[in-house]
Image 1: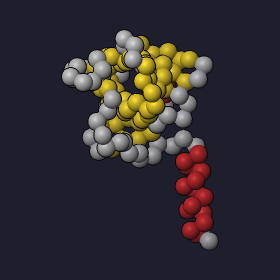
Image 2: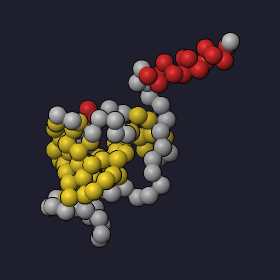
Image 3: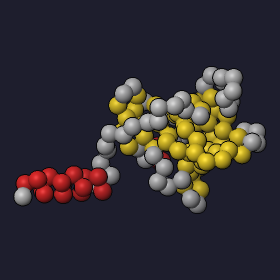
Image 4: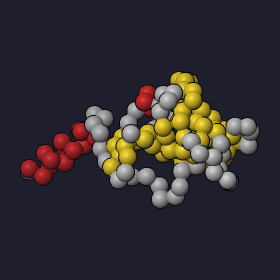
Length: 119
């Protein structure tokens, strides 16, 4: 019986948006840099990220759509927790992993997979 209550409490905590540990992809992010612009859109948020240090073969800047349900995380080092897309504001340093097709415009346009806000 006690085990059932523990499982119920854990399920309720997860449903209430309490921070929980999360993991990131093993591969390098598609872009790492500073958010230059951030705006709410009908289906999520759109951010413009400029790379901190442009790397050959990587994008120097990208317009990224962060859809509802995307993994937005925050932290540094080994420990990351769930965060809100509302924390994706101009000036924030982020790592973003793209998902799906990338429009080859200047800057590129992509959809966010996981987003890590660096703290």
